[in-house]
Length: 247
Image 1 (cartoon, rainbow, N blue to C red):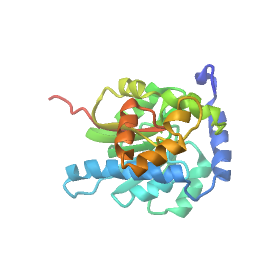
Image 2 (cartoon, rainbow, N blue to C red):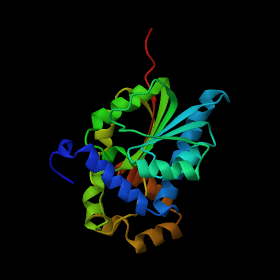
Image 3 (cartoon, rainbow, N blue to C red):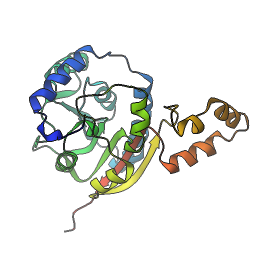
């Protein structure tokens, strides 16, 4: 959706997501499994810094709650979403997770978290800066952010495939996300899912015959590395540590 995103009432967003999650399948789709794999790699990257102690994790924009359930294997998880229907269903399916309903742009709890995980959320809010402010508020000093979101640089290719849209589609490119998250030391920031479209330049870069030949000659990893450097994947994952305050 284009235009003035600030004019979309929060009530309209809530109604949209109540209906969206009521009709959404529980079973994970392949893209969600691939995102889960990237999130788990990110968690593995930061876990050693906690010395085996219990950690508190916030799944910000948890939707139907499946990622919160996966994260509960690593610590105490709070899943937060705008949709009361999604939260009610998640509470029934995964009672080990604390779920609650809130507008994540204005939610300001007293509790602080060691890790904030937010997957495919920031592109669906009208104000990126308010979202970033929420993340900073939620994290303890030196806490970690694991964020996945579509890559705004390839949105035209995605849209050409008529993949569908939510009430707000407010995608960020990799440089835009970096500029938004300047309060974090970057531990990792990369793209993934490289073959998702077959329009424009992707008719060449994702041509089945080309990929088959690269696999045959065992060059596909090098090719993927180059494509990652060029930033032409569908999704991006950002892993960062909130700057520690100088006493």
